[in-house]
Length: 185
Image: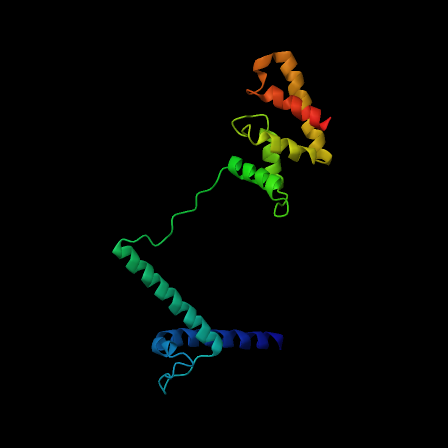
């Protein structure tokens, strides 16, 4: 009994697919005569169901869009807009820091930006001197593991500096490491 019902449903699906194919071939003019336009499809043809009508409308819209793109291409006009320029991680992180310093109501925490700042805070090329005071103020609010790791890294850098000499850190890195240690210790 269940097999017979399944077969009947499969047959019904095949018939509906055939109807859709036939209506798609026979009804291009009928599709343009949408409800509310005042024109009706030819009398001998079967009107499509609402679902079939939506499918046909989508297909026609897609074809029109494709045709418009083709015309633009032939005219020599670029159809696709130029891709947006991606900003670097440095620019995004510094923007994040400035947002924190200036507009705290609109600012929201972003782990990736904080991580970038913590990794590059000793490099003057990555974090310019004008942004470093804001970064120090940001570091005051560090909590938990991020604070512990920042202190550990600063201490390790200072030990490395003592062992290797003045050239171990990027220019200005020694002063920055000392400031971070003083602030967080």
